[in-house]
Length: 370
Figure 1 (cartoon, rainbow, N blue to C red):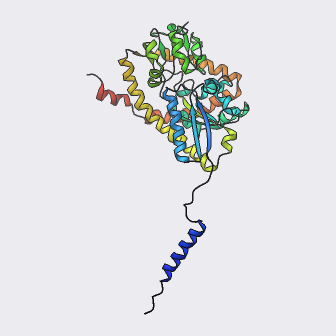
Figure 2: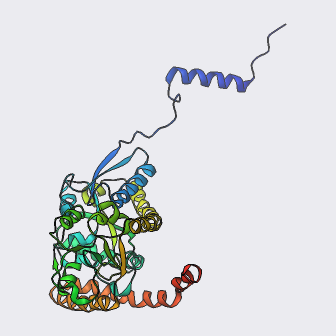
Figure 3: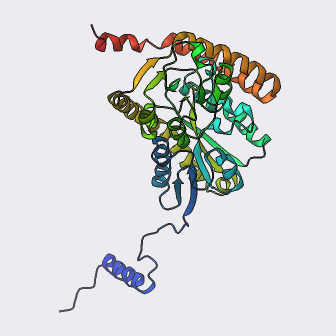
């Protein structure tokens, strides 16, 4: 009895298997052989600060989405360059990128402080970012960097909650109490507090608490309940004044060396773009969680919180008006940015103020002491 011939399909599979074994051409899955691009970043924040954590959060999002093709490592403030020299370090290629705030570059062009300092014509931080991304702000920031011959690519993200007026050895009850106070701040807030009579020293974040402890300054502002607690403010000062217009619309900046950025593939640039947007939302949510928790912990540590008197807030606005009139007359780009912000704020602010309900009313309805 003759043996049955194998079916054509089984014959094909056997031949295909033999071919694979011989050549190895199809023995392994197709895997991208693209080389990993590693970028060395530095933040302008101490390693223990939540701001440095935000920088690492951004890097992780990029690294996770890029797979093995792109890896960002973030070093803390001072690891390669001083905090206030981050922009030059990135532009020159000493660093591939960095994480900070635009106001730290204020010494190069005072207009840079307008991305953070001052009341921003009544815009909150998220509205300032809306102006930046959709109202012409990004093109203006790029124009400043180009005028300074700084080869960087800048992304702004992460709307910061309103910052306290400051930490003081004695509460500030009236405008005259500010006169003669040795105070730390940055950006055009330096000019605002100087106009109000303070003696200002723009220290990096990591140097503030030691300066307070040694009596080199009488008061200081940094940013938020979590950062202030981690940096040790409650260990040396017990009075914190809440609410202020000195930096009520600030956000973070992520910088890339332009040569390094331009050398990335288009899909990696897209990963960075979407990682910035995702980090902006994530940072906002994390800030609510952590700041509210640390606000309670600061109270437990004996910190006394005071609402900044309205008279001081109005004095801030009056001082700011003098500053922007002077700077706008000296610097054409400064005025150009102010005009752009003002036009956007007038429209967007009217919409927001008319549409947004008074959340404090609802909060008090449920939680105010009867």
